[in-house]
Length: 305
Image 1: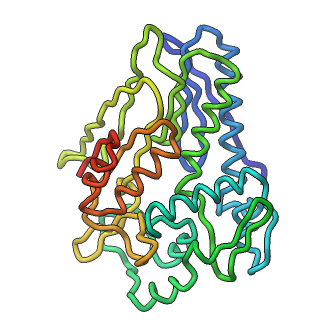
Image 2: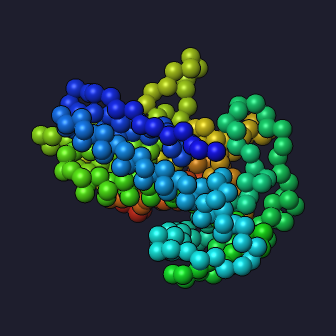
C-alpha cells in the first residue's frame, strides 16, 4: 500500500514553517527566509530524507533493512556503509553503557506493553518469562563488519533508540547544502539548529511537560538554543501502572525490567542530536542517579520528576 505523505508550508512572521508526519511523530522545519520556494525545497528535502530513514530502519516495515536482518534466521545479511556506521554507533553505546543500552533488546517488547494508560495494566510478565527471553538479547552475540551482519536465530534489532536522532542530524547536513539561512529541524521533540537566528538571537524551544496538574494543565519548559541539538527521553506517553508503581518504557537490557525511580523526562544538549539522544537515554538508565550521571559527564541538561 502506498503511504500517504505530504508536507504543509505555513507563512510565519519571520519565515516559514514546514510540517509533516514521520516516525510516529509530528515533525517541523522552521526557516528564516522570505523565499517561499526555498522553504518548500528545504521542507521536501528534509521530509524525504526522514521518510527514507524511516522506511529503511523501521522494524514495522517488513521490507526495511531492519526487518530483513531480523528475518534472516541466523544467516548473514549484506549491508551498506550507512547501516554499518549505525551498527558501529550502537556498539559504542553498548560499550559506553556497559550493556544497559542494547539495540538487540527490542525482543523484550514481546512481554512489555506500555500503552500510557493510568489504569492498572492487565498483563505483567513474571521473572521466569523475562529470563527466558533474555537468552535472545545480547549485542555481544551479533557479528558484523562493513559488508554484512549475522544475527543469531530468534534475535531482533531495533533502531528506534537512535533512528530519529540520526534523521535529525542527516537532515541538518542536507539542509546546509541548500542554504545558509537560520533553520531548525524538530522531529517529535528531538531537534537541532544550523546556528542562531537572525541578529544572533536564540531559538526558543518548548519542551513538553511529562505530566499535567490536577486540573489537567501542562506547563511546557522553554529552552533557548543557538547551536547544536537537544533530545528528550522520558515516559510521558509510554508507561504502565502495576500495584501503584509506574514503569517507564525504557528497559534495562541486562535485567529485562523497566527503569524505576528515574526522572519522568530528561532533555540533554550536545553538538549532534544522536549524541544528545543517547546521553538522555543513558541518564534515564541510571534510575534515581540520572541527574548525577549527567552532572559527572558535565552535560547541559534539564530533568523533570
